[in-house]
Length: 387
Image 1 (cartoon, rainbow, N blue to C red):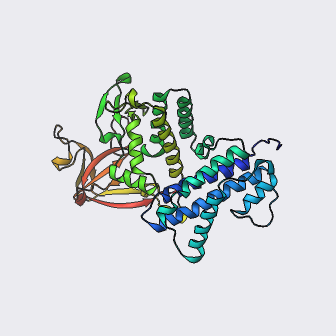
Image 2 (cartoon, rainbow, N blue to C red):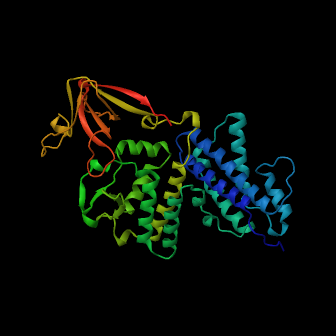
């Protein structure tokens, strides 16, 4: 009888790696139209299966000789643990190995429909070898341990615990906050009207994406499934923020935020989707290709050209200003005077700049004030920020 041994950290790390690669492989193999994407998935499935089998061999203290490949692990593991019998799913892994090698060495891409089952086969391999050799449920090995942001990880842990004890509503709340901090917190709440007065007279503001189209592009760029994201948002409450204190709050949607939707199955879907999204958003691009945000490097210098250059609280164009308020001057500069701040282009306004600056009197406790100025009245240059 094989003596049960504690699973070492390096073994678990390999299983986690295999699971992460498998997730990417499954997504690629779900594309039955594009053969090249599907083939990429086959390569990833092969890597994931090989890593998982290597983890089992490592756990059993098998002696590695030379280089080991996917199918060679079958004999290596069986020789080390003969009483456990044959390693499962050899035929399926032989098929995976064959079509992977054919694609890699001969350039013959696999048929997508007849080989689509291989993703399920690899997942089944994970389940069987983890149970058989590690005495561990594969589904219990969570990718959440790879999430670096402690705050996000805490919300996900809380959601997982609430699901286990049947507190589904509370789990959805935690997952809503987790997703908020993963990809939804970069917003401009001043652009949205308050919902009501709540704590100590503070106004509540919804925090929708700063630009819905840009947000969708951002999700796609990180490999997030938009259909699943929309499903996730249907089940969880909206997240808002108090204007003065910046504290967050949540509010349920009347149409879908009700007990009939608070099921364990839906909560588990949201949990797994949230973990996957967190991992996708923490990927760092190749350093040399990483975009540098303008305001992290430069500050704008706005210099007056006219005898008296005025900055206003509203645009000169009525369709972009509040019809209930008369335009007020928030700052006046004499010719040659300048302020520093951020000139923010307005997509539909071609003759004005929107300027945010500490030199403009702030409102509602903000650090910067803001105002509109005619482009013809100022010269805008940039100054590199020194650190």
